[in-house]
Image (cartoon, rainbow, N blue to C red; front, top):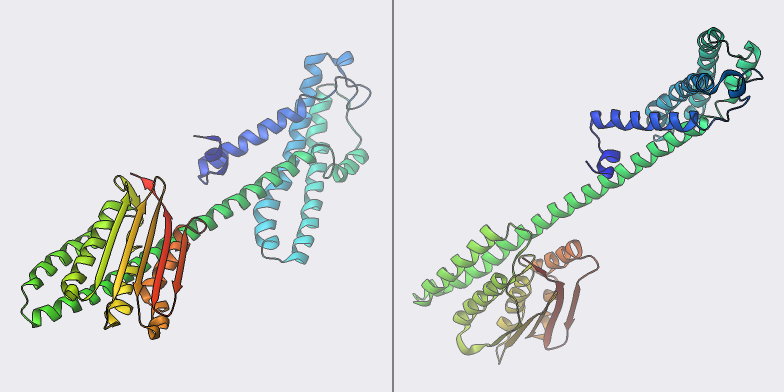
Length: 368
């Protein structure tokens, strides 16, 4: 297990291990550096007691100090902070903090007066008077070994903040993924409705082209339903779907629309999010070329570079279609998906003039 996983894991076992490591390390850090002379009264020192006996006293005394720090830290962190501080009950928090300090001071006095002192006397060490212990019980809540407790509280609060940030990030990712799935699902019925409408008009005329159109639509729907569930799809297949869509429209309109579809660059082995391009193509036919009676046209150019794909689509349009162009459901979905997928790494420029409508899009490419 890595250090990050050990520090920020939420499991009960890892939490217990983490706390044990902290307190043991803090205990040794506090006890070992004590100066070997008169630290606890005139009778205590290496020169009087010897190194081993002196550090025996230091280790026992440090243990009692640490025990008092634990008596303060755990109620503070696991009761006062979540119940009062995080809920902004500041007066109650201040009152409970003073009460906790008073309780810990009392327990510190009891521990040192009635447990620590008898142990030290049995080992022939100097001990403080009860008056001095009472005074120290208050003072040592704020000085001496208290910095270990402060460090423990600081680390715990930082860890909680970090975990909350990770939870917020996970939540944002889950919401974004859910929104992406919803937006992608909305493209399917929208596209399907328009294409079936086209095929229906051919079946009414008993056109032999209807069979070919149904086969192409079948291939497209298979791609959308089976393969587009993945977050990334082959750019090659995405382009193939655009070609099928162009062919469906070419069959529908015959020679009445000038259609140009050009591809440049190497698009093999590269992947993109599915169904980002086809809504623009669909929109161009629906609101642009299909509404023009004289010489409609549409030009699509796709350039695949090493790490980015350029999509450029221009079509003729009647002037009154400008508002409808901007309000298409498919266009709104693509814009929203781009914001979620590439918040600062995509380019989308839409220009509408009196007689033309142009979309320029640029998105990152990744390799399979």
